[in-house]
Amino acid sequence: MSDRFELSFKNKVVRMWLLLMIPTVIVQICLTQFTALPREIPALIPAIPLTIFFIWLYLHKRKQKKEHFVV
Image 1: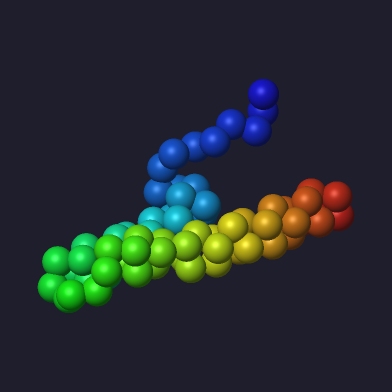
Image 2: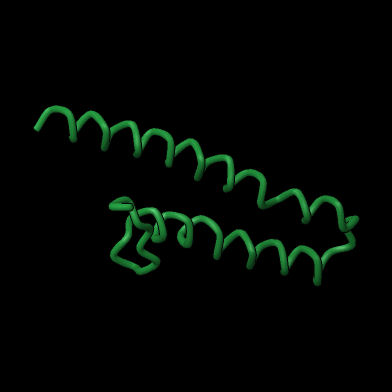
């Protein structure tokens, strides 16, 4: 298994996930605590950055494969 996942800030995937999810969780907590919105609306908020992350991940892996085959 040479394709191990490294859980550190050196890993670009981990950094991107944290960059998207930490602000999302903060916004979600603030909306839940300080507004009168139904709980379902703040619960759906993480779906947007998760979708963005997985699209980025797909494009990133595709780019890595192209670079790997060119070398």
